[in-house]
Amino acid sequence: MRACAILLATALSAAAQNAPPDLLESARSGRAKDVEALLAKGADLEVRDRDGRTPLMLAAQYGRTAVVQSLLAKGAKPDARDTHGWNAYMLALLSPAGGMIHSTHDAVLKLLPQPKRFRLAFNAGWTPGKSMFSSCFLRPEDLREHLRQIRPDALVIEAFQRFTVTSGRDLIAIVQSDALGTSEVPNKTPPQDIDATLFLMVEPGAACVQQSDQLNMLIQATLTRPDEAAPMLAKAFSAGVKTGMRGEVATNANQYGPIYRAWAKSRVKELYWEVVTALLEQH
Image (cartoon, rainbow, N blue to C red; front, side, top):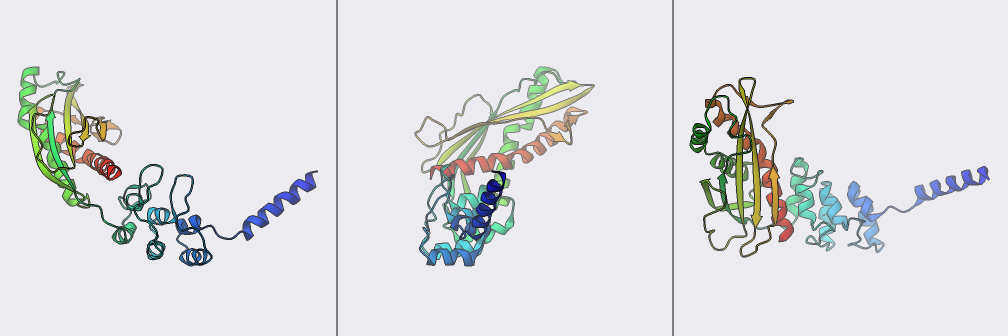
């Protein structure tokens, strides 16, 4: 019985080794010659894996430029979506193997249809965080006034705008950008002809710890389409400013502004790509 099992396993292994190459795997692995041969034999150009991804999607995701070029020439559909709503461009741009991190995907992105620049109205306000009133250096009323001067909402807008231009692949055009000051709700009317409005509520905090203030900040982000109540994105971006394994601390109140500016700069990358993902999924 055991001998039969060994023989069966050996036969299955040999069969697997002799099996013809799979179009999906060939596209994912970048084997352009195998892709061409399989298509010449009649392989389905739009075959899908368990995640609904086509050969073009997989080739784009893994940065296989030659395969992407070949599949597009054969008529592969660049606008097809997988089960998560992502197309080939999004997979090349946003996936863990994608161009957001690896510049090898730049050539792939140039081959695929480019999305339009999304027109975004951007408003932000701030309100005291849960630990706002425990500063070592300032009374609650003085601390609130100090934050009015720092304008943490303006710091987040500044960082977001800079990332949009310098590192965001120019996918978003900000047509309105307002820091609203201390406010619980947006109070600006967005302009006409926009794709979405992004409203941020910034919640700075300062906790007195061993004669220093440990700073933290929470950003509540809501992205909505015009005339639609349900948000496209509603997410909190939290945690304190981190340097190694400890939170960022201020030894005097004058350090608040630079620390909060650095925190905003470190967080807007994640916020930006979340916004871009939501916009691409809806268009």
